[in-house]
Length: 287
Image 1 (cartoon, rainbow, N blue to C red):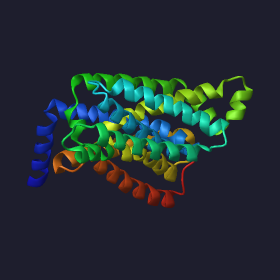
Image 2: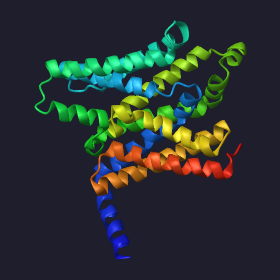
Image 3: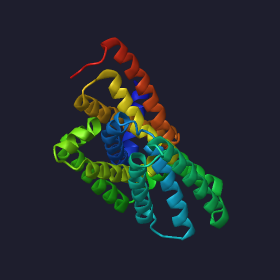
């Protein structure tokens, strides 16, 4: 009993600090956005676009660092969005398949970014900075009110996009030929999805780091698919799963002093194992 009272006392102490509240709001919003479109990416077999774009964002961050930009967000967003559009076009219209294009861009951007930081970087702790960027750091706990406003604004816009265009996203996910035959521009919605994913990737870098972003996209969707079968049920379950795992991971990280990104991913792995066995028991629900 004393352990529980001490635990909740420590928790209430942390939550009395604004930066912890900022971290939770941003973390939950990012995980929610990632999980909503993660289902579409998994079903379209484009799961690793998160890896590719996250490495591009790392490369863009390196360029911004070399240029000594005080605010690197616009440049990182611009480069990541352009790359997402090019990946979409490459996967559809050329001899280079989508997975191969993602692999090429992923490795290339990561190598070039690290090379630029080594040649032109001025940091006295380059290895530490790179490690923090790739695997996540405590930067999620140093967010300012401006960072919070930007993240909340972009997240709300992305959630509204998903809600208002849910039927179109559903159609594009399962049958692009049919939606095109009905007179709807499938390429436009694919483009919008690519742009939204790029924005999510850039926002998520502060939460889990470049190398772990795919976990926010893949694990919630795959976990939900173990239990449910319909698109709507999987999407809702994925969102709930992602928010719970992120919140739990943040609590463990803050109290235990563990790396934020790695802790969240570890919690998601445990959640996936639980959902896997739950799916074996229930057999998967269709509604």
